[in-house]
Amino acid sequence: MKSKSCILLSLLCIISFSCQTDAGTKETKNQTQISKEIDYPSVAQKICDCVAPLAEINKEVEFMVKADRKDEAMNLLEEVQKRNETTEACLDKIEKEYPNAGLIESKMITSLLAKKCPATAEFLMNL
Image (cartoon, rainbow, N blue to C red; front, side, top):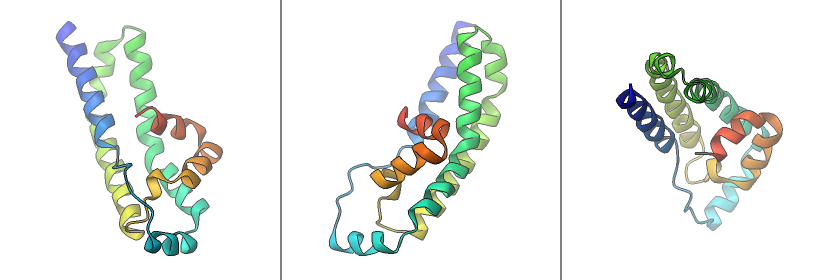
């Protein structure tokens, strides 16, 4: 039982860290030009839509672990992995639409996420 909870926590950590992107991007003249063309509210909504399913199941798993329902949480790991893969693919697609724009790390996007989908924004902040 103890090893299952260690595995669960390890997997959740791996999944969480795999969603992170490189926050060390520097704004260049090219990025400034790109940012003028970006519809930030639309991009923020796309990010909300991408991440919300993973954020939901993560919250459910955390609740189960805290409630000492680790076996039930373990049963969700396959679904967590599927949602993580879907989320990664979705975010990759957004980043490909706006290359070198640093959207995921953008303060504008962070602010819009907090307004549009606070639970998802909180999930992303806690990664």
